[in-house]
Image 1 (spheres, rainbow, N blue to C red):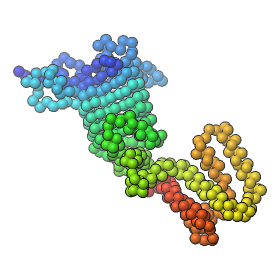
Image 2: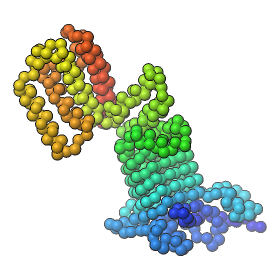
Image 3: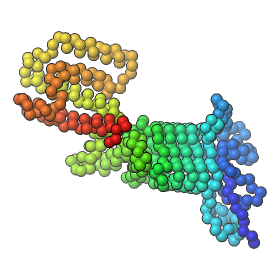
Length: 430
């Protein structure tokens, strides 16, 4: 009996509110084949099966000259199951060299200035092998996108796409260029056990992840508590390190720093979860990570570290004045001249008026009022701003010496962080 000539094709099913797009292998004779898979092909196959009559699965609209396909249900891309194929076709007449086949089509779900897709429910890729290009650029994923146990041998593009839910990669291999250029992640992107085989072809330029904070990573771990958190957090941290290293190899230091920040978030969570003993090496490392996340978001937020420097100097000036006030009230109060006092009151009133017309965060409010003690310190004793230089000059009480020593140490750490953050946010190499 002659061997069959097999080809790749699609099977579209819609059950229990799930649109399943499955790669199947069929006898080539008389079967429709595809050069590429596009939303219109899926729409056509659904109509041939008498589905989507009320546009409850897919609807397309013309908006500003662009066709937009709205996928209203959960979408799953599923790879071919070799065991199913064995059951369907007599193995005696199958090709001798047959192994699990790949999607041999281009998967095109967007063409700029032509059509894009909006997925209103979850999207999954499971056990898929893609031989050619996969394009989901400028798409909008309203809910979760999960890519599990897939192999992309062609180019992959999510350029300009918006991910409003979770984006999860697990056990995925990217062989060629993968681009998330200008993609926008509302939640943390997860690349657990994901391999980029060519770091020079990884594109995360201008990827928007700046609004992601450590709380979102903690929430993700809580939602996936069925997995051992220690293993999961390690996989997530390793994935961010891989992306960071790829960007560093491309001399893309600014974008690499964002993924380094996420990597350090994971490290902090990992250390915190072990409940380290106080003053142990792990505890000191956790304190260090917490301090730099709080003050500069791990050297990525220049404005934040400037605010903390202002608050530190202001706090020191206030505490130094209180120490002097307790020691010699008359001498301490003598520096409060009427002109300076009036200017301070006027400034505080202007800050209050400003706050009435513009909502400000609590920390920003503290920073605005912190300017007043700094100005008094500059006008009366500017040498104290440098801290350590005045520690060994003049006579100070024990309390003042303790205050000066603590202030000098914190100022050194913040100034170090300030210069490092300034370098990372400029073209000056670190």
